[in-house]
Image (cartoon, rainbow, N blue to C red; front, side):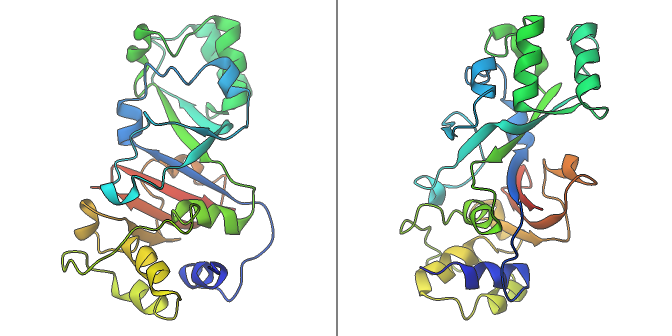
Length: 244
């Protein structure tokens, strides 16, 4: 299937520009249950190899059960905030030295965790929920095409979600019109499922925000990266942003 035309329609462009692009996933659901995280070790954070995280709750419906993401932990971002009472001052000082906004890459966080002997896999790490929050980078090759492929769950073709005839899955009219020329029909329906009206996307698919609003869990990128496309899942508990 040729995805370029479909992605261009969603982006309101005639083509896909070259350059470096990423897709990030974040949200309240992820942060609420993040710790203890047996997969957030210093060694794992040092590797950019794609990793599946079956314990990560994306607050997605059953349509996505076979369309799971893989993540690049080394280039994911972690925000450390409101943590003065639960993390050593020396650790916080090192985080601030790495980034004044205390938003650090996974590979840098791994070094600091090892340096200060902090274990995110230990039961005691529960106290760090909402003190260290995650913005996980989806594993892509750095192109806009691949970032869109991951963000729209078209990365496991020919596997696609099915829109079906359920009248409760109402597509936003603007995006229904934009996607009208996308072929084949199963691809069009899959993408329409990710462009539902906000009320109806609470239990299925996703709500497409375009470039007008940062999705839940991704606003830390505002001012650092340019938002090209964003989706929210569930009752705005989580979201994915494609950025340049």
